[in-house]
Amino acid sequence: MAANNYTKYDEDFKKSPVSLHQNGKTQSQLCKEYGVSQSAPGKWVKQYSTVEMDDGNVLTAKQVKELQKRNAQLEEENLILKKAIAIFTPHSKNGQTPSTNFVFSMTYAHYAVF
Image (cartoon, rainbow, N blue to C red; front, top):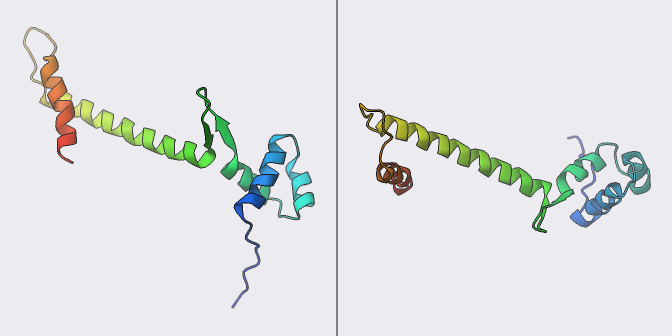
């Protein structure tokens, strides 16, 4: 049975070179200084880098990815609702748009199913 030839580093250890990288150190310098593989700092930078929002909140790359996934899900639900409204909206002969109450009730009918 082959031995697993990698070292598992804790989060604090990984965050330290990420911080140094954000302050200008190169990945090559970090590899030499911390004695890690060439690919490790790049992975850690992707994983632990942060983004400061306009409102002062700080998000990790993982949180940004989760928000992107949730946004895509909401966009898909929105598209489904728009298609449902288009299907179930009665077409008027004089080109008027459907009543607001009908659109409102169709939008919330989707959530009543769950």
